[in-house]
Image (cartoon, rainbow, N blue to C red; front, side):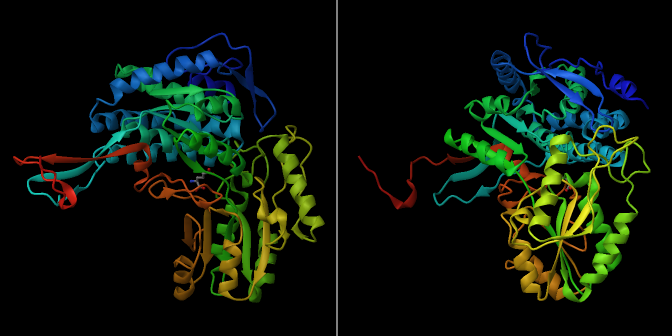
Length: 510
Ligand code: UN1
C-alpha cells in the first residue's frame, strides 16, 4: 500500500495535515512542522504549530469538555473508550503503516503499537468499573470514613517519537476512564501519527455527541510543551522522553506544585549467567538491542556476561548480527529500519567514536549504509562493542542500536554493574538457577522498575505498571494501579450521630 493510500484512509490530506485542537481546525499559525519519513526521506505532510492564542483556545475547550465528561458515570466513559478500541481494530492496518512510515520501525512493530493501544482500551474499559477506594473504620461512634477518587481535570501528555501512538494511549485511555480530559503534545518528529489518532477518536466523540475537547492536540517543540508545564490549569503533566527533557519538565511543574509523571531514559542490561539458555539469550538480547533500531527506552544497551561463557556469547552474537537484514521497515523481510533522523545518526556515530576512544573493541562493526534503498541517510548497522561499565559513554543512553558487552565473575558483581548506571528502567537475568533469579529480584537485586527473568528488557505488557527509578523519573503508566496518578483522592468522614465527638479524644465544651 502506498503512503498516499494509508494517509487517505486515516483522513489525512497529504502535504497539508493542518492543525487540530480537538475542537476545530485553527488557522493563523505562521510556522509549520514538516514531517519527513526516515524510510525514504520523502515529505509526508506538514502540521502548523500551536500559537499562544490557540493554546488558550485549546485549554478553554478542554475545560468546557471536562465539565461534561466528569459528570458521566465512569463505566459510560469506559464505553466510549471501548468504541475507540473498536475503531482502532478497524484502522489497525493504515495506522500501523503510518507509524512504520513516519517513525521508521518495522511494520510488525507498527502493528504491535496499535495492538498495544487496543489492549489498553480493553484494560481501561474494565478499569472503568474498578476505580476502587477504601473504607476505614472510624475511631468515633456513628461515623463512617471512606475515600473516593475524583478526576484531576486536564491531563497534559508529552510523548516521544519512538512510540508515537501507544504511549499516548496508555495515558489518554486511563485518564479518560478516570474522568480527565487530555491535551497531547506529541513529538514534532511524528506529528502525523498523533493527528491520525486524534481524528479516529473524534469519530467516536462525534458519534456519541460528546464535546471534542475531551481530546486535544497541541503541536510544536519544547516551547509549546512549556505552555503546558507552566500552566496551573493542567494539574498533571505526563512526559515521556529523555532524562534531560524530564528534568526540565519535572522542575517546571514542581515550581507550581503540579504533578508530573515522568517516564525517561533507560540504560537496560541483561545479565547472562552460566546456566542461561543460549537460545533465549540470543533472541532476548538481539531483539532487545536492535528492535526499533535501538530506539526504545527499554532497549538492551548492556550485556553483562559471565566470564566462563563470554567468548561463546560474543561469537554467537556476532553470528546472529550477520543475519540481520536492514532496510525498508515496511518490507516484512527486514528486521531493522532507519533511525529517526540524521541527528540520531550523528549521535550514533559519536557514540561509536567515544567507545573506541575509551579503548573499546568492536565485536560487530557499525556504520551508515549508503546506496539504493538507503537514500534517506538514516540507516545504520547495529553494532556490538566490548566496553567497561564505568565508561562515560556506557553510562549514557544513546538512542541507537549499539550494544555494550562486558564480563563478570560473581553474581554480586553482575548486579552491582547492572545497577551501576544513573538510569533504572528495565533489567533482566538469564538463568536456570532459582537462587540467582530470586537474588536478582530481591530487595538487594535489580534497582529498576522492571526486572525480568529469562525475558529481554523490552516488550513489556500493558497490564503491568510501566516505568522506572532514578533518572528514569519514578513515574508509572499503563497497567496495575497506575490509574491513581490520574485522579485525586478525597477522604470523607460522615457523622450520623447526634453529637460531635472529636478525634484524638479532644474535648471542646462551651
Ligand atoms: C518506550 O520506549 O518509551 O516495553 C516504551 C516496551 C514497549 C514500550 C516501550 N512496550 O518495549
